[in-house]
Length: 446
Image (cartoon, rainbow, N blue to C red; front, side):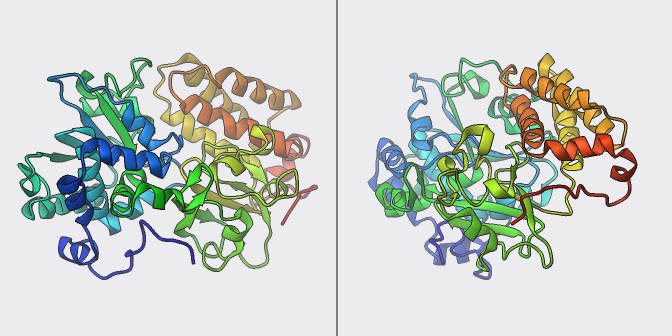
């Protein structure tokens, strides 16, 4: 059983309430930070921890905090990105629903460290019941003196606001989120300037993910060095993984970074293995936006070493033979999955969610969706496969925000590793279009 930092008390009855959370040691980190530590001292502990952003990008959280500009007479803001929209990812939803006070405590500590007196939690609009849970938790924390004016008699004030989004995936990108929070259409901004200099209302702003902020309490209570000792190398600490697909035990799991992928996939402690009578065909390790990997590249690296659940090991070999940890959306496919259909489905999503601001993304995502639809439904040609690769290359790296890359990578990687399956759809259209039809050619199954 690995170390639990975020989900240690997940099964305690009533943990969503202030009183029960408090009995489990809740808000002691707020007391420690505000009464015994300076804001810079909190930032230093987060730097020591080496925690990397858990929303997908993996940028060091303490370094991001240290970039925050501090001009005199200008407010600073902390914004929690709870607009969890990546297909295959549901860990933040799980955390907010079950232990809302863990996020509230993290918001108080992080806001104190950054000198923010008003902070926001931006939650996707479909999760209205979660918004009500958070608002209740905020009211409980305020009634207990942990929010509002003069927190714990320290002279520090903090107002915490929960803001519902409109259900747009693009608002998971931090600058599009800020535009939405200001009441505008959620279009990503050109950078620079970065939010740390000009963010919300053109003031210095830090945007962090739910999981990232929720770790602040443990780091303050136990120290950055203790957190850095968990995990392996630059992948320190624990990570929440949303596991779904053709596995026996879908769910949200907290792992110590460094667990072998094969162990996470087959251990009864976590996924429990592939459903009975079936074999692993492919895996998306970090949500729909990361490259898909076939079975033979998931369990072992090129040198024969096991592939680990870390930022570095999953990306070993670049996009030729590697992928990304991303947001931790762990989607498993067995041999009954059609890679072409799955890729088309992902492309439909990205075409629908593109804000349309950048031509390569606006036009390219639609083009990829149409071509993939053509192949899936028996009207494709061999030229279409190379056309998809070409369009993906023209999108990648040519857009304001990463949505273009997120749309291109799944398509390019699916063709790279499963080209024969795409070709089969073209050469055997009558078979491929039958309900439940799946390519039966050479596959590296585990």
